[in-house]
Picture 1: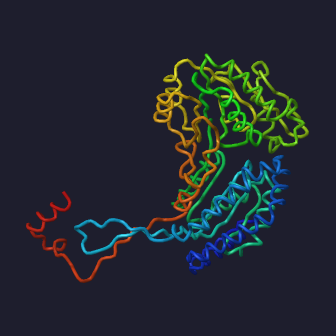
Picture 2: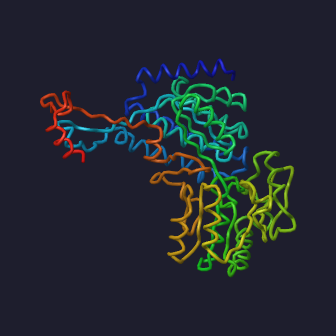
Length: 459
């Protein structure tokens, strides 16, 4: 789609929003119900697309994508009316007589740019929040997941008019054309490098942004951890979606005294969860493209592989791979892995671990496995990161009760549930002053007596 067409679509959406069509909560809920029904009716098509793009089995497609979108829809359908209402605020005594309130209002025309690793969830999840808040939206899914993008376009075209929600497909040219336009809000999920471009382009129009990025999310295992359970949950979180998860444990930092026990438990869990020949497991996904397959392959040092390491260049599958004796100078520690490769580092002093993490970019997630509460408190209080789990991995993002987002290099802003509604809303502060009383102290000529009274209120 060329830039002229994109500009035309945005102008139509701007006119549609300015007409006030999206403002009524009843309208928003009706649209969300329509989307909910369409997703339920087309679940098999969505799962087939996810299978084609990423090799995801239907169970995983529902658990990690479709089901989470439906949960977000259920939440917004239930609470959109309440979230849209004005919220009372205290009125200072010196503003008597008045009432104060905060009115959530939609930003207007929103751009949602989504990635390929969870192409349905990370497109539709933000869209649900944006529509619940009363916005129009242009959705730009990733070119790397064309089957899912096609299903998304069909769903949205069937549910909504293009003046309300529109899908723009394509690659870099379309991305660039979209970012040249003036939107009222941009929601981007993807890499740090592209996130910087999005933020730079948005700055030209003073457009607010939410950036959901990534980073090297650490997983700390101390000597008090329940090793068998830690291994099971680490393997689940790391190799889910073939490691292509923004909050996957990027590497494990394990106490030296339990490293060998953990290594053995992890290798046993890989075999238990994925079989002795993971490349032949139909429920084990694939790398999204040859480009990413080659990048991940280059990070594997055969001399340090203690489990896995095999690859299939035809199916673009890489075995769950564990590397030991890794240090910070290794290529696998120089970038976010975003694949099924798990480096193991060891430590003896937790304070040094925390000190090292404090000097690095803030990750999107952090996980600690421990039964020692002071150690848990020390890590969670002294390391800055987006969110995480204690004695588990990745599940913190699968809830409408808490916001999900990064901090620093891992992003800015958050969404899910009420937090998602608020992200796509401007909180307009309003004071409604009464007419029957007008205190004279603020008007000129200023009176010394009024100044004394004013200081009693404001001092």
